[in-house]
Length: 235
Length: 346
Image (tube, rainbow over all chains, first blue to last red; front, side, top):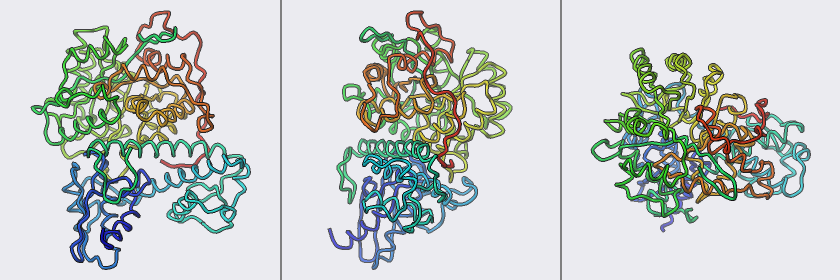
């Protein structure tokens, strides 16, 4: 692997499947990567021919933007393979237009930002539940969680991911701010913490299960062939 | 009927198809569709249950009768039609196709119909004729179905309301809803079940069975399920996870029992994507683990399994169940509760 390829993969690992809350590199969605001087060609693949076109578009567009952010790369082309709307998505993204331009007449209202926000909120809730689950298993009570502030937390991967999602939503990440907040940033009161986390658990089960299904389908569809930069073995 | 360890289970397979996806009856989208189905089949089936692709494209009446009724323990199966005529010129599995088997084996099958609100007044008349002709008690709706330039519709559309009013009038009381990846507008989440919530509130006399328990939006489905007593969950596509991803399936069934209770969940194989034999056997064997992660889930007793495997669906479709296969006592699932406090707009 050349240095440039590693850099591009590094940038692509910052692109998440908005629905599954995992990097496209780890999910095995990057099927090929070619660099020629300043230009890079990236090929993406998805678990099914009919994966939702809006999420597909976000990943293709985000991948292109990520590649272009790498110093020394002046041109990036991203091709989504074997999808019912490949043609529209590929020409739309690589022409630099929005989702509305790729599917004229088939959309309404704000581009895809609203959709992206809905899934950022879900992923925030799920990450928070994951973190709190660990704290509860370590012996903290729900009441204690309600009183905790971010500054009291020890560093961990789950905590970093939680902060990352929290920042994306534009919420307070200062040391004094409460640990358990809703997706609007409001502190969850002590009496509501148990119920809040109970529903959050359902959100996490849903997202994690969905990710498992998608990994399985991708594996079957491509006969277990790993994606570029995919570290984990597929299920 | 399935029997194990002295317990008997009446089995209603709430979701079966008799499809034709042969090369002669499909365009490139239809090919993509059936390939996607085949990947689902291969991904979650036990190895010995994986069919060759040619058989999967188009199987026979004998295959179906054998897999459901001879070896699959099914007492009654419910046909859920999926027209998809934009992908399959003669239809994927229409009411008319399914009716051939219904007429031949009237006691084995329940025939459901379908409607498409985009067909307007003319469609409404045709729907009424379909209901009269086959004496339908239920419909299967696929909101992501394409039609011309349209990529889908919502249950809350005014045009759909007219059809639901017609369902009330005609006694078509079971509305099975299946979400898919496309819908207008295309930039919104197609899997969102908020429209089912609206329709269920507006039509309290109809039962709304959300197929695949709202997957991949389990949380959105549970959210509406706790508020609407006439919302049910169909377990097709969820239940096959039991084989290769048992831990995940146990979590899903635990969540469903927690939010909806045992009286509103319906078994379905989604035949021929999966076959009922191994699903029924593995489901009856399933126990809720006692470890921490599962502690707030209720126990999976034979009574709970009896309801899910057949008695709940029998109630919705007035299917006669032999006396010895009934559950003696009423459900212990939670009643309809207030909205949970967790704030998560959908």
